[in-house]
Length: 251
Ligand code: PEP
Image (cartoon, rainbow, N blue to C red; front, side):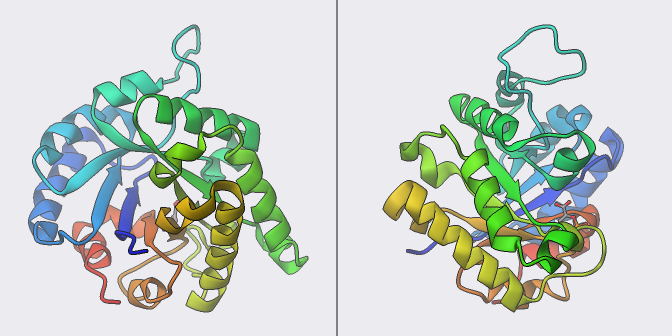
């Protein structure tokens, strides 16, 4: 089943509103004819509204980096799915390894966040990935399998095609150390197998992104693999030329 490649920029805690607008002005012309792929940018919350204006009418959509699963209430510093939908987010990242590690987010919370997004019509990008210690201990598939079943728990099967998985080995994030295309494909094939167990035939329509030091120099080889359907890009997505080259990969 053909899957539209999907490239997402995760800006993390980078770029002011003015910097985000300058990025959009430089980036959009570089990808305006990249119509065979889907592209999204996840800026910090503060830049979402102005980025929605900057991206309006373009082929680039808006994504959130996080969400609170509650609909509203006394949750100081948090942002709801309704608020993200209101400013035009089409996607939302949940379960990024930085949030799992630094903010102690567990699979049950991530599943609630993904469900909250779906209920507001926002497509979740659910991140999974093993640490170096887990890989070296031979526990990669066990870890990824457990993260998948926990983070997808309770999500309605009929919404499966809207759910994106991002496989991001923790040892490859921000380290310059990319998983080889062989390693990434091996895990992606495993993920698709688990998605098929969970969602049946719909797994063939679900995109699985790779994340971890994706750059213009390595994107083509990664995207040539059958189960790598896109990339979640941190560092290299901060530069318009680099992210445009990634979005215009040649596989
Ligand atoms: C990420 O944070 O999702 C990521 C993959 O970062 P980087 O591309 O910088 O490794």
